[in-house]
Image (cartoon, rainbow, N blue to C red; front, side, top):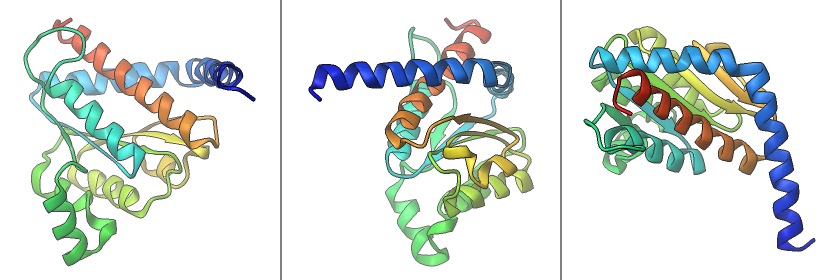
Length: 192
């Protein structure tokens, strides 16, 4: 299969997955965007976390809020919990890797903040600990998940599960979902 053929196959797969997301999770995506907009309206913070490629996407999406998405506008409070290597290595060394996100939330979040986790499996221990800690702290949790959602789908306040077992396709759609959430927040806050 050459690159052109592979591109067509993957675009058809993404189109099908996107249609499935719209049908199954359109109202959930709208509800999540309202949660985010309301939090930002009240000067709460949007926290993000993930592992591997999802960590990179978490950092990317956090700065879409802090920097800008489409238009120049005021900065919005958003933090990627996987961006601070000193915090991660300190917490992993002293408390264990499964605590790297939960411990940060404990120290810097406040009630009615929002935690958005990106996980292709929904089973990473550090993600599950962060979700559980968010409940204890009164932080609303949103999971962008894949592969059936794993254990995370049972803990998240809101979850959107990409109906795929392919990590690359899941991550591509997580990025799109994050961009949609950011764009809706800008519109809802009158910043678009």
